[in-house]
Picture 1 (cartoon, rainbow, N blue to C red):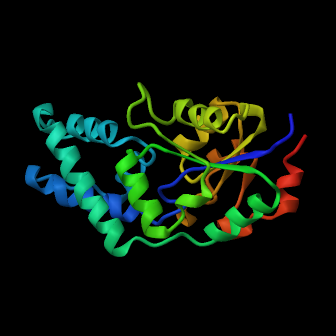
Picture 2 (spheres, helix red, strand yellow):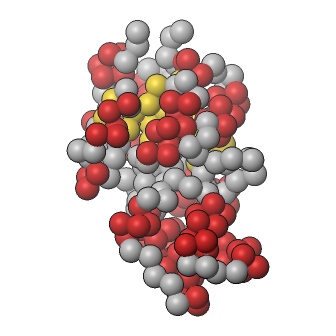
Length: 220
């Protein structure tokens, strides 16, 4: 099937929000006298906030009665940080233009809740570029489950075999491959040489490295 659809992840790919998520989590978890190292935090990149918190509440033996309020606090802090200091990642406009010039349908699929997605797209003035937006917020499972990508593809009236996903996390890469979609991975520079990215169809250091020729080479 011809490739004609691209689905972008958001956090860490379109906006440099992973440091903001980390800051928000650290600030919120201080009430429990908990601190997560950046290296440990990176192992949970791509998870939804409830799954992220359930993981760390279990690690630090925090009563789950505090889950809902802690999630609300983190998201409020995050949205404030996005609005005040969120920055677009390198090459975003370039990549969107490349796929637009190729007449690709363009969507976005994120583990983040819709409130965060809309805050990001409003901040970066990108809303009009995406014909479909999907969130794993209310799904039974988030990434690495493929449902959020499949939902986005369905909204775009595209079959999985016609889609390219662009991701920056390992959970997102697994979700894309589980959806039977092509995947371009843009790892964090500190993780670029890791062997686990080898299952991706293309590995690049920045969205600025996307070109029509590289996309054409992905077509069987």
